[in-house]
Image 1 (cartoon, rainbow, N blue to C red):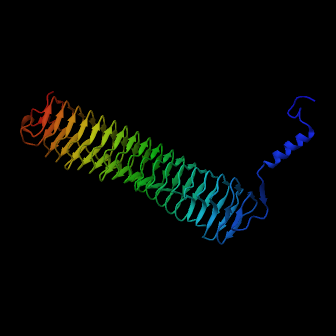
Image 2 (image 1 turned 180 degrees about the horizontal axis):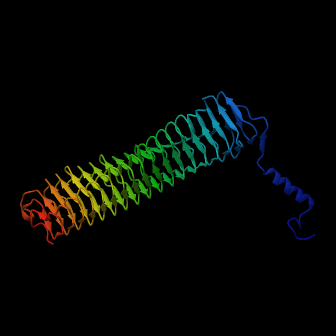
Length: 466
């Protein structure tokens, strides 16, 4: 006998191997007559017909390591119970099911390492619910549509993965995380929902990446109520009635490479501090980026706000923020607006061709710094400081603006140094203050340059040299 696969085995041994192999196969029961409503499944099942309408629960998983394949069939309810329920079991797979008319379409309660794939939940209260320490579960390529509340809810659960799921036309939110931590949402889509596309409440250290939030009645992505240390990256949020991305009372989050377009506002932070934004874009919104209501110590690096109808960047009653390498071009108002806000830093920023002012500090915006920044061809002027004190404008340039390059109105104890103002239609520098500073003003000018400004170098004279 040749030394093949079974070359040295006796016939009895070969028969034994085949018996062991057969016993290792998970049995699958194919139901020509479907299980009854409320059935508890302890073996793997493939449906051959629809289940329901059910007066209570649809199908209940009752064992570990089994699968339910609906093969495209419907599990239908009468408005109560759960369509498919997994409670306290692990390594369960549910696929190819359509679940309609329950309180929860598919629910995982205290269940781990389950896989929910290619299912559709419609006309339930909640489409898919993962709750009560259901950890390390995977929901992939499922669809939740026309549910009476949320499409997908992850509550008090961790380390779950949602990938490639779609939530559309739900009455409330597309995806909701509630007191959930360290979950990953990737390439999910929330569109045309009545609330937010994605809502995180009291949820921390989650990652939301490569998602889309489109045409929602609320905001595209919304972090609220202490949703801290989350990462939002490479998401597209557009045409939402609210904001593209909204943070409320949420801190230490990271937002990278997100794109907000055609929303009421692009990015808005309210009472949200110590967040990091990098390389985000806001185009064709109301205001591109807003830090408001005590949103302090945030860092913005390389963000862009272009062609927004109201303005590019706005800091309102917030302090100690840093904005670097940002651009605000062709906005309908100011490029950068700082209102009633102090100790903020704007560095290496650009504001070009805005309808308003390039850089605008007003109403007790004190002790701010703008440095190494350029304002070109803005309709309202280059740099305007109104009713604000002790600000620093250093190594900035204002060119070809309508109005003055640098204009201080009712503002004192500020310092302008090594700035340049060229080809503006007003003065290079205009200052209405009176005091003991440069040229009789109440501010200090040092080594500031001016050239070819229509009304002259400065008013009063002596603030700059050509």
